[in-house]
Image (cartoon, helix red, strand yellow):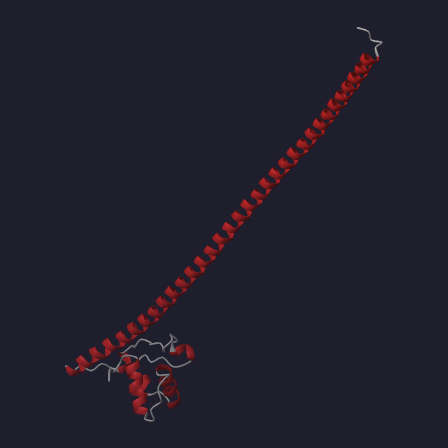
Length: 201
């Protein structure tokens, strides 16, 4: 083959240009692949970071949920405590009230029994001195005892009959706070007798 032939030389030059061009294209593709790989690597890194961040956010959300559950539990405990305290207070007040009424009824029952016993003895002709009688103190409505208000103890019938008008008035108002005071001293005394369970008139 005659390489001095212009046509053949032209072909060699063309082939050399094509080969050079192909090498350039190969280099560009390699650089492009490298750039693409770097971009892919960066994208993967970003995705990993996003995933890690999302896991952190999920963890925080779980912590918040846990805290909300704790708050709800505490609120329920508070509501339960308040309800329990209210029930306990109501029960205590009820028992206190029943206790007061029980003491009042016990005292009145004691005095009534003494009155009935004396009445039976008198019907049989037996006399019992007033000084031998010991009556129980009956509290005013609300639980206050008369003696805590500096009033004399009504421990026997003679004390009641001998009360001054002022003390008699205080006793009547103590036992009957919602009623008008009778003008008659005798009616006031009978009302006090009745209040302490002595004469059931």
